[in-house]
Image (cartoon, rainbow, N blue to C red; front, side):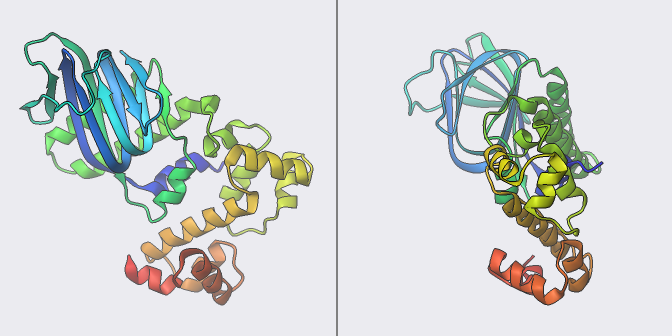
Amino acid sequence: MSDPLAEIVSLLKPAPSIAKLVTAGGTWLVERRDLGSPFYCAIVEGHCLLTINDRVPIRLAEGDFVLVPQIHTLTMSSLMPPPRGTLPQRLETSPGVFRLGNPEAAAEVTAMVGHCTFTGNDKQLLSSLLPGIVHVQDGSSLTDLVRMIHAETVSMLAARDMILTRLLEVLFIAALRSAGNTTTSPGLLRGLADSRLAPALRRIHRDPAGEVSVEMLAEATGMSRSAFFDRFRQQMGVRPMEYVTNWRMALAKDMLRRREAPLVEIAARVGYASASAFNVAFARYVGMTPGAFARSC
């Protein structure tokens, strides 16, 4: 069976960046801006406040896990934070281990935090299909994965980057799966959680080379064309054929980047009858020809 969620995370290609173990006490606050990268956090003990992309602050407690596929502003603080703009007290006590706030105060929170990067060619498009924030309470299995990532980050052992890449993929899939149908933002999770739409999404992903139309997808769901179109756009945030094109072009970019096959074969794999038709569609979508794109990678 086709697994759209796993396929999208695989194409995003999460790669390791930073992993830290943080303890904090007293009043403290850390602000970061213009990061543009995925962020995750697991609370091991205690509690703190987390504000992501200027949303309403979230109170995090022991066992909570947060994943943000695309973060631009981040504020973490004590429950009673100091004034904004206060310079953080920050001390690295050992490699990858940090202390925030008053070093003499009792630790009020212990958290494992990390940033990674998406190295896939269509990261902006693909990450837009994911929820803005995933907050899982009682995420013990996710915390175990974060522990493994932190341990591997500081280990500097052979094949470290390969192991970290696989662990990050598992972490993303497990976290997104844990969110299930609780997410409120349109996107892939909402679509897959909708029992009427899921068959259409799996059909799109199972056979990107096959003929597809709104009518065919509607028939797979047992809905009328208009009902399917409206429901798809509401749950996914894009029109059905727009999603089909986005997915086919994401696959094409990945094959071009890896120089996996001749152009005519890539065109056929993503549903185009000829290389020339694919050339025109790709250039319209990407802004350059497939050949130019492959040379730029």
